[in-house]
Image (cartoon, rainbow, N blue to C red; front, top):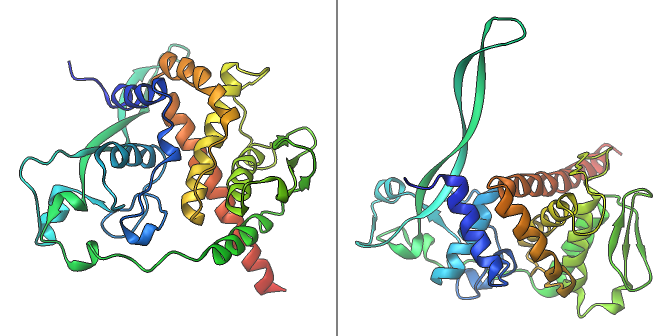
Length: 300
């Protein structure tokens, strides 16, 4: 029997992790779009979200695709193009529901219940497609220079109004006191490394009860709840880094989590979907604070 979507995707990520590969840390290639860092994009320029980001990044790395743009066979055809013969599609998924009528044992009445599930379909990278309009293949405008990128990142995190403190040699989020602790700026290899690390810690910051109220029941280092929260922060910071044009920071201390992540993913085939969904919510929440800051300034 063909493996379900949850199993297929989880098995792929587990396989990568068993080889020590965190796919989300190497999702881009400098050959396309002048090296611009981005999330995978649909044919209309809309970015993919959640688990689909991980899957398409993984495929791009594995198969050497530099272009970030993907489309279905039908979409390519509608654009007057065609997928090259023999090319293999890549899996993406979307959430759907099926309605079932079940007997409520307490009331004895039949009730309709919506059951969520994932459905998959195939997309192709534009490098697998011939005859597309030129702009699908064109090198995009150069990415922002380092000074502009860092200025953008500084404004982004300032707009969150998070309590960010500096000192010591550790980066962490203190949930009980609700602040982010960062080593001094000068302690980092470069500015990009600093902001990539800050992206990780501010993803943790979103878990507070007065924000997204994310709680996996973590009690001690290495337990399942701890591993899930760290996985959410890893993925969330990678999504933010892509949006900000930053390269994710490869923190060696986080390599220690791989064993815990493997245990969680092997025990629950839906865990990576849950983590990616929470990571997307965290990134969206932080992005939403940018709009709020702009609205507050306009109203002042």
